[in-house]
Length: 212
Image 1 (cartoon, rainbow, N blue to C red):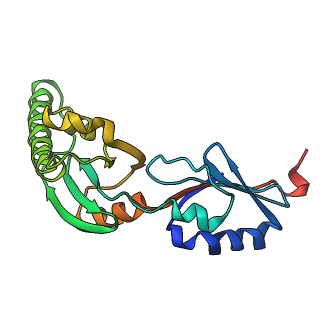
Image 2 (image 1 turned 135 degrees about the horizontal axis):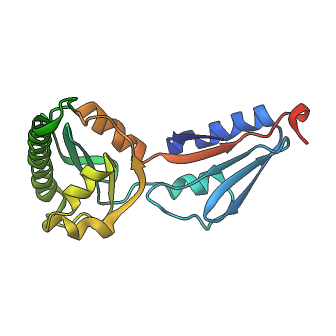
């Protein structure tokens, strides 16, 4: 099994290539996803972004049309080493902010030195999360963002969304979860692209020699 993210506009070409590799392919709608099943038994499950379910005809054009971005949505990425926030209208950027905060790495020291180091590290992380929360509040709460994609470090994201003003955004959080390194502008730009992509899971059939 393999997974990938694909821009919606590339879906027809990707399915053509899938059929070339695996044989004649049929399309069906199963559990809110577009499922392609090939002659050799291989299968590709294509889902819509933002946790949407598809209930239309098993056609690539109709499916891709349902993948258009929301009119109003946002991205929040948080790790101990930085944060990134973006507010978007459809595919257009409205506002964004990235920032870095120094949080010391782990130490091998023991005893009281280790405890002091841990407290210092926790304080540095707290300051980083407060900075992320402040910019998220400014960009995502005026007015409240109705759809929010998050990523980075789960504990860090939780810490930011636990702040009183941002707790209102919890119900807006949707798929996909974005696994990203320390957020920088380039990381944020890629995250915005990935948030709009189609998640595809490919189940390749075993070759005849390995089938029971």
